[in-house]
Length: 87
Image (cartoon, rainbow, N blue to C red; front, side, top):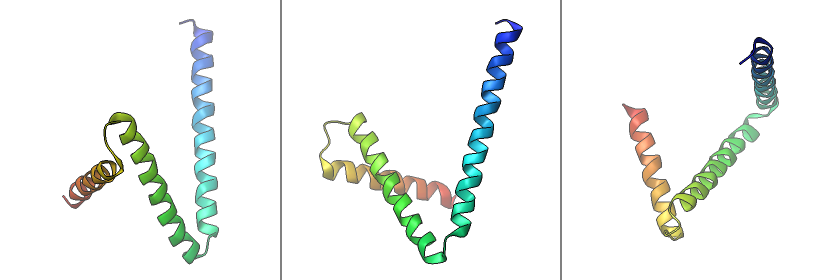
C-alpha cells in the first residue's frame, strides 16, 4: 500500500469513527431529553426489536424450525446470556 493510499484509508477510518461518535452523542441527547415513562417504553421497544432481529437470524441459520422452535431457541439463548451475566 502506498503512503497516500494508507493516508486515505486512515482518514476514512477516522471519519467513520467521528461519525459514529456523533451518532452516539445524538442518541444520548435524545434519551436524556425523554421523560422517564417514554424512556421505559423505549427500553421495551428496543428489546422487542432485538428479539425480532434475533428471530430473523435464527430463521436464517435454521430454516427447518417453525415459530415455536424459533421462540424456544430465543428463550434458551436469553437464559444463557442471563446465566453469563449472573456469574
